Image (tube, rainbow, N blue to C red):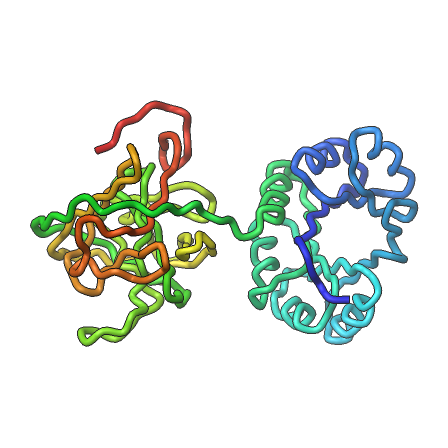
Length: 335
């Protein structure tokens, strides 16, 4: 029985907690684990599957819980997962046992105590566990974790915009973001002069006669420019540092998080690029160099040295204003 379909989000509500069950319901969880005798009370609150000795899924029969302490436990999980759903817990949170299990097993859910641990488990071997069982006393942590599981890899809506201006500027400081992830063709980061409109800036993954490809790097724009982060917030490019997370986006709008390895701010000649889609405008100040590229709707990188008025490139528009990187409902004009 192989792990397939959408990821599962369960909430452990043992000992019994009505507040946790309500939070699970409101967050869109798939099921709650409750003590025996509480299924009827869960059903009185809403339509939500229960996992218990007398629940919709029978704990101990259809669902088994295994603590991973050694190699023999990994083997047991693999065997059990061929016919049941297995919830695994790793004391002190060890990643390697989960990697071994995911590579060999069927439906395995990881019990986690935090949003951060859930994110790690969901990304193991680029496939992740089949789901998460969140065991936390913090209701907000439960909400965030269920949302993470249900959302999966978020897609960004990209639109083709027409380039309306390309202007050479003087010298200024720009930011190179070196991530711990190699990017593919058609992939890069979103950056913009405003927090409501971003160009897709291609990674330096293209071979050229000037420098060797650096597929982990995006020469993203001026120090003042914004980029989007995996949690939906924005950040100044100048605010990025080693250990931060950034959002990688490809030309189809698929996203994934990446860790920043270093951020380099250097003085370079600059270029202003503007684009328009209907009444919406987007602009970005970039380094004036052949290796800096935007992305065509087909995913082809286009060097700013070859960019012309009328060319079509990809951009992303965001509604609303931002306060310290967080979306807010407020009228604002940025030029």
